[in-house]
Length: 59
Image 1 (spheres, rainbow, N blue to C red):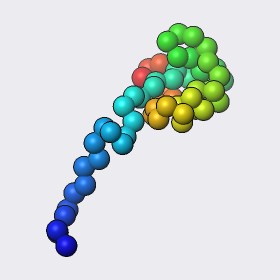
Image 2 (tube, rainbow, N blue to C red; image 1 turned 180 degrees about the vertical axis):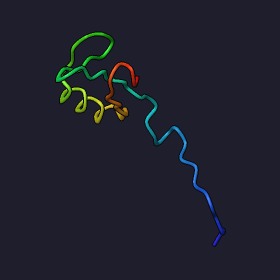
Image 3 (cartoon, rainbow, N blue to C red; image 1 turned 30 degrees about the horizontal axis):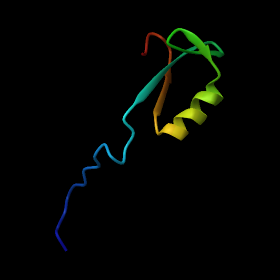
Image 4 (tube, rainbow, N blue to C red; image 1 turned 90 degrees about the vertical axis):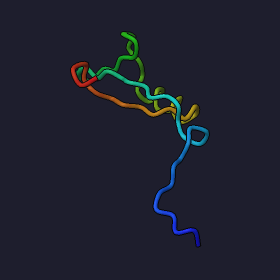
């Protein structure tokens, strides 16, 4: 009807935060504190955050 080629999704309906989690072996860290990765993902879903898990060098 309007011949639209693009859709821009603004911040009101997308996440506003990316949380970087450091992976070291089988342990995970956020702000140098060890965290339970399952809890991190549960909280992220609750608050709409994006999670990025990577090694310290990748972050």
